[in-house]
Image 1 (cartoon, rainbow, N blue to C red):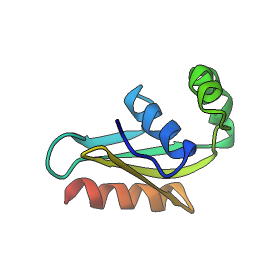
Image 2: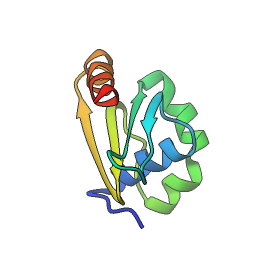
Image 3: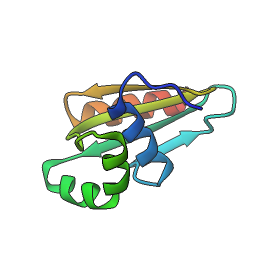
Image 4: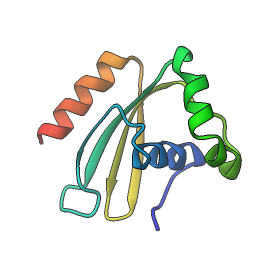
Length: 98
């Protein structure tokens, strides 16, 4: 079972698992783990809410708007938020190349 710092982090990880990540690289069970980019704009929020409505209800969390990197390794999931999509994309590319 994965460990999360918050229900928001669990939601974002489950979005990645359901194919809602913008980009992803690696394998959560392999050495080095996985990294995923998730960006949710105000314009995309309603679509994401529709797609993840059951998970949102289960977790009791609102759909966040923002730019996130979701890292998963050996059951530990960490999420970092970035101030812009370009900043998150640059961070993702650096992590995916490492």
